[in-house]
Image: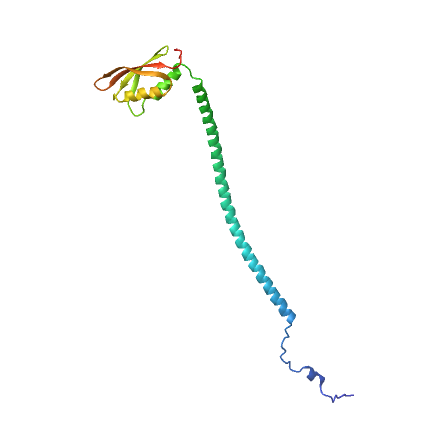
Length: 189
């Protein structure tokens, strides 16, 4: 038996040429893409800002470490100076203590040496003590230095009187001799 289908062919209909279909864009998809773009942009900007801050902070850290090392060095120098200062102060204290405990000829010699004028050439050849009478003799390049020396001896407060015993002008120098009376009883050694 033969069957003939008189109806239109169904297979031909199924093969209809495809029409161009335009994809449909959903608003939710666009919103998600925009949100993702904004999020990516925000993360990129944050990364750029934080990377810049890290660089700035690393530079600051380097500078602060260098400053810290410099301050440590200064602290060590300061400690060394403090030790030196204490050492010198202890030496000064010993000298002051010795100076306070000076008596007799040492005290006399200190007053005579401090009385020599700084700007003139004057040297002593005789310093003799007999009781409270003290003889001082020597030479000066200029005769004008001798009155200054006598004035300085009087000002010390150690001598009650300072008198000129001898003044001889020689070729290159002036020879002098002074007689001083001590205010204090000084034991001769």
